[in-house]
Image 1 (cartoon, rainbow, N blue to C red):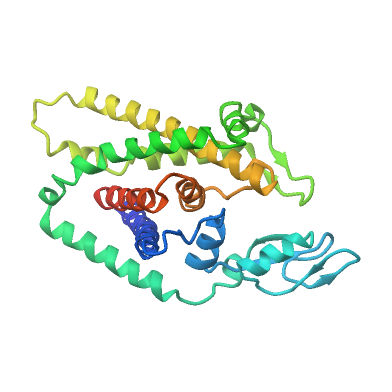
Image 2: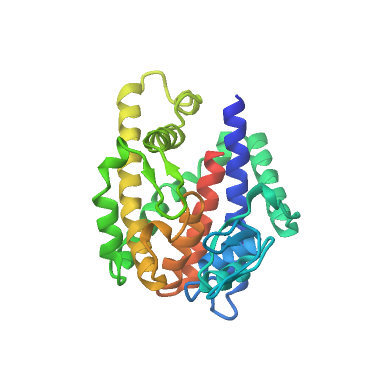
Length: 305
């Protein structure tokens, strides 16, 4: 019960961001220009949506402490996204400030979150019948969007770099720790296994009763084992195909920004809110494509939550 409640809370935050992107897309209809266009998706997500703070340092210094060297000037204290970008151009190393600088409340995000919670409560009140017709859209639309994004992604310059990184993984990471030569930080092999297990449990909702709950609405004569295996295989196949889409776009961003592919964006929500908007902005009719993409995210999340 506790894990399910935690996941619903997490889902609703992601949905609030999706709703904000959806409204931003609608607001861009008169101009036809998306706010995250021109490879500006990271600035919009981290700077506008999250209003994230960053700490920077020069080589040999401490994060958040000003250090003035011969060729670099790294300001101290918490920096916003634009200031962090300027610091990177001065050869500073930056990281998210985290809980050291929690910041204030984002009123727009709170408003979006209240809307999402209201919709979830309304759906709980109306019951599963309210989702009957939404499934006809939420099931085929993601595959249509993935195919369109895949076609666009593999035609971008640098896509082959991303696909090679995706399809030729470093298998030694499964058994050996990795040490960052610059920071000395150690990434253990156990963390790779932990992330893989987390993805599997989270993706299939293992141990949370979701499959049992959904199957309870089927007739008793339904072949449960066959359906479970079918769902697991379709889910894994969809994730693999989505990986092709994501890493083809990551390869493009790596080439455009001139950084290694593993430093383009951080894992997690950034893959959706930084990588996908970049691809959508490069497609024909980007406003229309963005509208359907974030509407799809919203509907998928609501039907899952």
